[in-house]
Image (cartoon, rainbow, N blue to C red; front, side, top):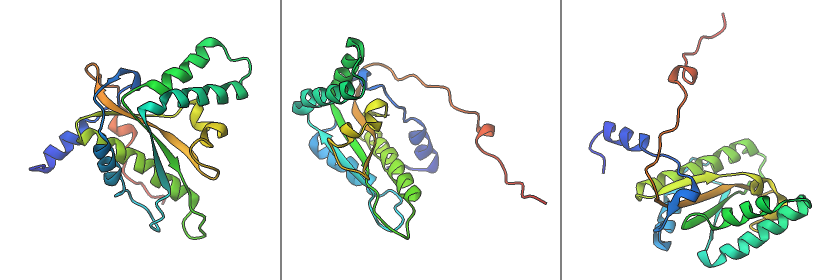
Length: 194
């Protein structure tokens, strides 16, 4: 797999997010989707709670998803214009593969909700790494549908929350590197108080 740590670091450093609208076929097959979710199951998970769920939206379900997104959008924003509603249609039909990740916290007096939510975020990132490892591109999108209860109810019930929509496919164009923070603005040495 990786002959040295440098190869692994170079590989991990090569992962980039791709805009779902820029993804083309092919996307991961059913077997590949199962493998990437299986890989993500290795996410740190204090208490072994598995506080996350993944729902795959089939290509034959995209029109229904678009209709449900538009319905929920109109219910929340009755004065929505054509372009706003078209954005719901567009979102539902982007990329060959669409996964909805739910944060599904487990009621527990031992494991704080915050730890479970952090685990869900790590789970999403591991799905993205697994997508990259399979030679595809991925994008983790939130936006309005993530925070709407009617949309959430399409996939689960409270206390579940949508952690995001993960799109996967093949890059339709060369991925551009985006600016990253300077290391010094992120990494520092601890200087304990006197």
